Image 1 (spheres, one colour):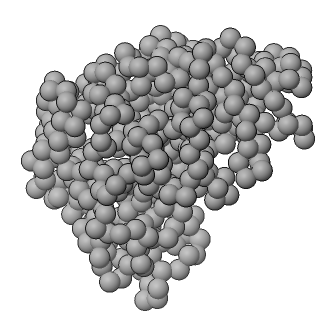
Image 2 (cartoon, rainbow, N blue to C red; image 1 turned 180 degrees about the vertical axis):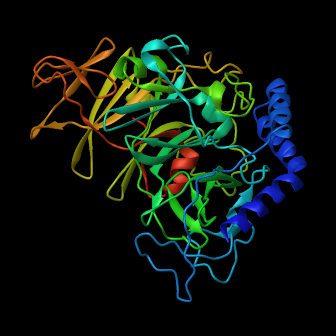
Length: 424
């Protein structure tokens, strides 16, 4: 069944080449940048998409899908029929899942990532460029947004954990999930569809559809499943290389595809006066649709902090709480927007955000910013925006990272409609 599905995907790719060109042009046209539009269209037209050679075993039974470890249900592909009778009830309105233009994997994920050591490539990027920062059990990896903006998904294994690292340019959100479902390892691809102007992924084991923004299986035989998220925030390259000098950075010259890496096909997209691309319905009117926010959800309680509230100067610490649980939001200048100018290293300042549990050995620490570092009042230790103490009594300690999203208000409020908004 899996092989038949993959042949279908390839056939769709061939038949949809023209649609892929049109969609990428439409997407970049929303930015108003003609050169970037032409580059994106040309790149998409010449794409030779491949699917992962890594497959998972699917088991066919006569019963309803069982949530058994090591067993995934079989059934039709949600890529081709979202309304199949065999599917569980969808978690979202199917009419709200719309084509973004490209076919499945028309925006090609990176399935065989190649990495370079940070220590030997300190100057490979401008220090202000954005990367997605992931660290698991001491294995730290940077995924440059200059690659993610063209590929959106990287299937990787970090610290022996199979993960899918994702980035959606339309909502400026970076999320990472374990790519093991019911004990079965799979990989993820781009479906070519959008929901709430956000990337919709598909798993290659069952071809069910998943929302990148919150990691839910929403349509297909795995509707109702939830992926386990791993904190992996956006961070400036300068901050990543300082925090993880023994880490690795994705080599964007070894992706297997040709793209104008370093350029932004969505020039001007983060202008707060513009509307999101292909967003159906009305955005939450409490603030501008493209207001940048720091979105945090803990045990079902969600808050969105306007970026201006938690940022300022060289650095800023915001000591607060969510549902009675203390958190600290650290912000440091030095990261530029990837969605502003045509060049990814020349955008407006947005800074790097880290959200952490400030409790260490049972003591809640209160943080203040001093220059571009942070100091806790209780021990006087000095901390980086990555949450690592670099001097003082707590040197060598790392704060527990709390998952958060640096994103636009329209996307956060669409997925978290009951969220509080903090603007002052």
